Length: 453
Image (cartoon, rainbow, N blue to C red):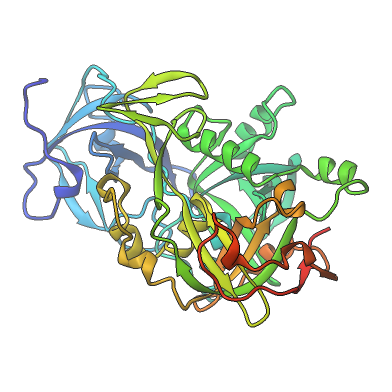
């Protein structure tokens, strides 16, 4: 079996039924008749070792005819099936085809050699959910459901709600990051799971991953709802959760309780203002290798890497953005460091993502998509540190950034910016041209900006 040649999911098309793939079942659910309550079919998400996935469907007679039981997480060889174009809306994954199993399909369980990832989840950043939901009229639905990740706050245990479909179970909470928060409603069979697995024993903050959700807006507020194809994971043992914890730490995330306790003592730490990009510094490397555990920069040793922070030797390191830009308006200029989230926000179009592929990233020189930032107007949430306040450093870290030529911050993003008051930001009234470690800039003067309390 191991010497067999398998097709890749990305190569599947409708030209034949003579396909054979080796894949992991990452998700399973049933399609149930809303009228009779009977099972109409069985659904699985299949993931191959090239990290491509596809939705597959079988009618009950076909599914029950498989000689090998199919379980979530198992690895199987699927042979002889047809490929169809997806139809309808709210498809569980972003793929334009799906697999239809037939009476000729065979399923064989194989040993899990660890080559296929346990999950593939295509996250939409919480900061982009409002824009996505706003694309559609009240009666319209998006073609694909979306996956989200964030911190659970304001968890409300299972209760019953009187709806037009009768009394239904529901679990409510908010999903948040450092700049956004959205309401979530969990429906159906998933309510019992959510109610049971959300406990005080979970590591705090509790990171939730919700796959295949429906997003809508009501009175300028995002509503995220689960579907029969949705899955809920809390504190999943996955790199995405580790990355989210690191991101929350870097961005200074505080729970509602922590914000309340520190509100009286905290000084302003974030500023919110709009600039134009004057220059992208080509003398500073625009990406770096980082440890896949602690996220700190690592040292390259031939084909290996050394993390001096852990400390340990690793074979595979992550590539992360680190882009230095000079920004200004007609009264003020400064240097801003764009790390992963802020950088991806700005260059996050599909064209940019295709161009900036970390697996093919050049060692030197800037990609054109980064050079093209020059001249764009951006709104930046700057995270101040002690060195900024004491004037020891004139390089500021971007907590978040928005290209205002593309869109403005959503109401949920703006909600995290406290009611503004003008302050004299005199600590930055320096001439950046005379700072050795700062790229050349326009003249800097005192600027009145907004502060977050």
